[in-house]
Image 1 (cartoon, helix red, strand yellow):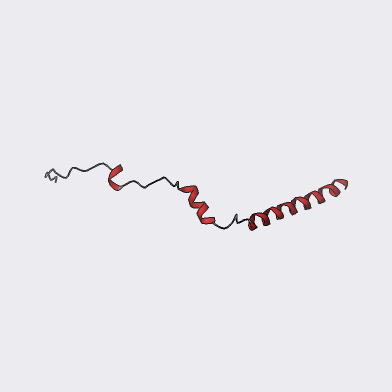
Image 2 (spheres, helix red, strand yellow):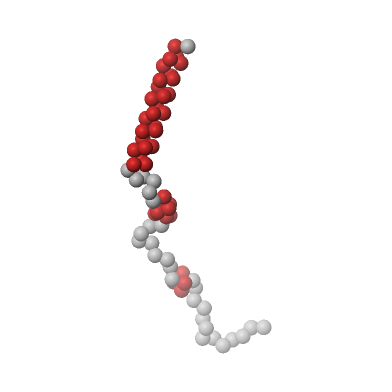
Length: 68
């Protein structure tokens, strides 16, 4: 029973500390731009998409051969 006398106040203090941390982060704008954070993780600023002809092999269109 004496352990509960110690654990209950410790638990309540940790809960209050978590609540204070949440309200601090809410007041400082940590939750303002959620979609921008998700996109910044996936894409780098210096990445550019490849052009369609840059990565694909070229087809020779000068030949007039036909195949049946």
